[in-house]
Each structure stands twice: as structure tokens, then as C-alpha cells.
Image 1 (cartoon, rainbow, N blue to C red):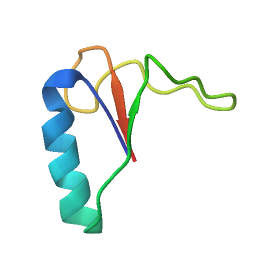
Image 2 (image 1 turned 180 degrees about the vertical axis):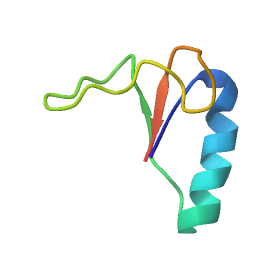
Image 3 (image 1 turned 90 degrees about the vertical axis):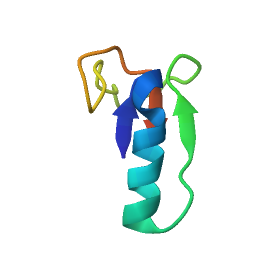
Image 4 (image 1 turned 180 degrees about the horizontal axis):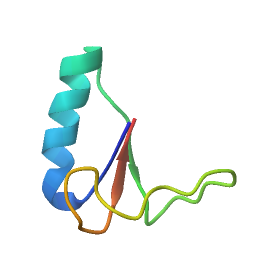
Length: 55
């Protein structure tokens, strides 16, 4: 699972496919709320605001 900014979405997609050899789901964090989990506020690769969840 990767929580990333718009700049790093491609990197997260590539790493996900390399590791799991299947296509991930991409969730827009602006449009989705989770009842039992708060996603990290920062990108997994940098300090920018996280916008997407790659699972």
C-alpha cells in the first residue's frame, strides 16, 4: 500500500506491479472517507500532501 502525492503516483504504481505482479486499485483520498482509518497526511516518497492511495 502506498499513500502518494500526484507527482509520485507513477512510481507507486510501478513498484506495486513489480512487487505483486497485478494491477492496483487507486483511491482518490479527496473523494473517499474511511470510518476506521486515517490515511497518512504526507506522501510516502516526499513531504507533499498525500492525494492517492494505491492498494
